[in-house]
Image: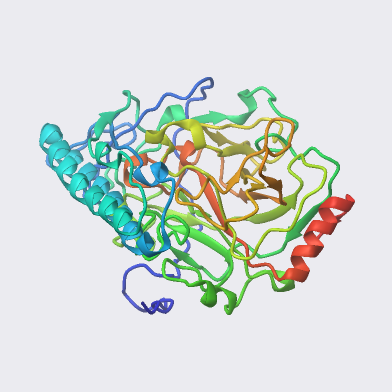
Length: 474
């Protein structure tokens, strides 16, 4: 399938690399209550893109759309249960996995619009999922694969606990203020957090005896955005149901082949054609971006002014290992879990902080930073490769995290570890949120990052040499 071209600012068409306008104004809301400790899984369902919901300090008008406070829909993650995916089955399996995500999103919206229809919505969703999972199982069997007990994963449930929503301003009725998070208890003043790390902002610290290599790729000045996910949902338009920022490879969308990526341009220095991407961050200010009525944007509950990072740091280090080996071309690696709110924290790896306070890392809260300090998102990737595969059925088992001592388990070898560090200039007490699947309610624990290696061999050797020799290079 041929990829659509990037849409010009004057063209009114849906997603696909739409260049999104920026608004510089930020809505300063009432100071958010500071809180700490263990996160409460708290949610408020999407009231529909036309619903105003409850204003800050006000009440929603009758007929504006019902909300289901403190609840969401949780379904077993079929993609994470896959242990093998024969190449000939991959297109059909990926297409049906994408349909599962769309089914949950639509069910979530139906339930939010009619809270009394919970049982009917769940029954319809189970039937839809059952048929789709059946097609996945059949495709695997035809290709000689073993689907296992996937047919047991069709049932979903509602889940969550009550919470106080920090919603759109009073009187907002423009379809860009859906009440779907974030919530007061998901924000904390960073000054109230005790130091809890050495300041690395990652899972386990840099450690080891190695140096580092930094790839300079800009901060998406050219507006490369789409709601696709080439790693998790290849061939599926709007497979992420939220918008991604991209730096590096200019050809990346759901339909990019390896050959297309290898021949594309890049925003990175030194010929690095790698793909680096993450969910956008938005001010929840009623700013109408160009995707306000598009898939991945307003249609999926992701609303407000998109923030471009003030700085993007893409650094490869040893991750605790003393010596690393080269990454193979087209290696696909991800970190974090976009569905951690309903999947649980096992694969969550988000880390939030503020400049000047990076010895205080938050895993399940958004930081409120003091004036002059920037919000920091840190995403450390796994770096123990199985030495054979550039991807795996669940996109995790071929590259895993090392042990606490920084060493890889038997059968895996250390490769350079990528750490994405993104900073944002957000005024104090301004409401913001990471883009998410509709049912994940913009919870900070769902933050995640993705990487596809397309460094030239000479650059890969340079990165390895810099890490292993203790030099810091770029």
